[in-house]
Image 1 (cartoon, rainbow, N blue to C red):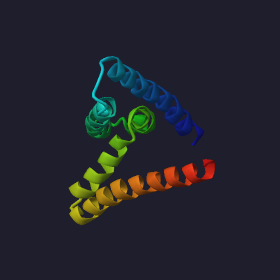
Image 2 (image 1 turned 180 degrees about the vertical axis):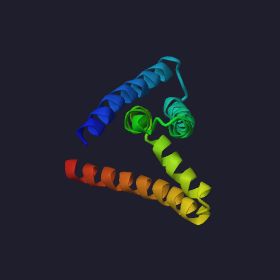
Image 3 (image 1 turned 30 degrees about the vertical axis):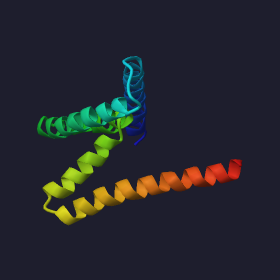
Length: 125
């Protein structure tokens, strides 16, 4: 059990550092304020999550999932895990559940963030 946590922790550190590096590169390249770095990380991470899901399972390397998928890719972008879950529901023939998951995830997460900002601003005012 502890081995899985260590794999996720090491992979997460690597993925988070990679995400931070991409963010720095995006800032240095200049931009219009549009979050190009985050968008790029989310798209690339989702692509790599799809590749990893197939390759690890077909090659019998599922034991690397905690390190690579949850750790590295999860640290790089949690959007990749979200994408995999949404696709898995869709691929399993649960289109309604996939749509609900996507809609609820986006709307509820933005609403929760908004509530957190509102409460924190009120507390610090």
